[in-house]
Image 1 (cartoon, rainbow, N blue to C red):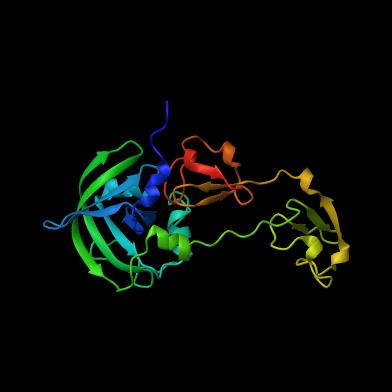
Image 2: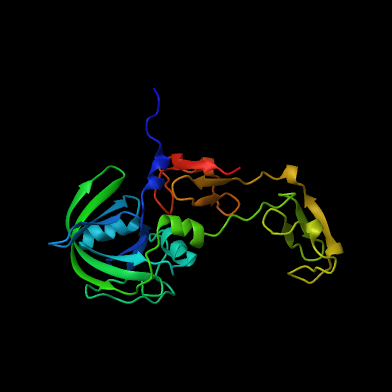
Length: 266
């Protein structure tokens, strides 16, 4: 039967980008793109949060959350901090100074957000992979006049551009004095293209002290898979688990779409 649904059609929506924050025994947060106004009087909004998000459990327990509306001043670090790691494993506010609203929850300041909205949960609806939350606004404040960051702006101006692939990917050269390994696949410059006065970063030995210990054909080439929804890249050379070995219920760290929405980067 013909598939009538193209998941890439979601890219045509004019998404905003938000940091959703909550608190139980600690503060945490995540990136979402599904926050909208439901009514103006009374002022209510809705959000949809993937069930795999640690922040969702905190919201369901505390019945409160903040939404920080990211502006065009937001940098990629804020997306990595709140979108590329789980609150189960790390303290997302470690080393990050954030203001606190009247409900006791943190929000993103005017350096990267143009407004924040504090909410109290009214009702929830199970949507399968996500939970829909309808909430009443308890506080709202404009932080700056900088335009809100959209998905289109994120891809064009915030998300780093893909780096060109290095030739001879997979070759490994080892310093015969200290054992330091120079891997073509991880460096921006192939070993053969390094200046002759280049030295070992570890012991200072000259380039001539290096010998090739692995050839490209001897090394399993790492692959890069790209989320067709948000553009997040899963680079096997940086991750501990090959993409094909990820569990079937694994989701994109940024937009929470399923593994099936990823495509091999050519």
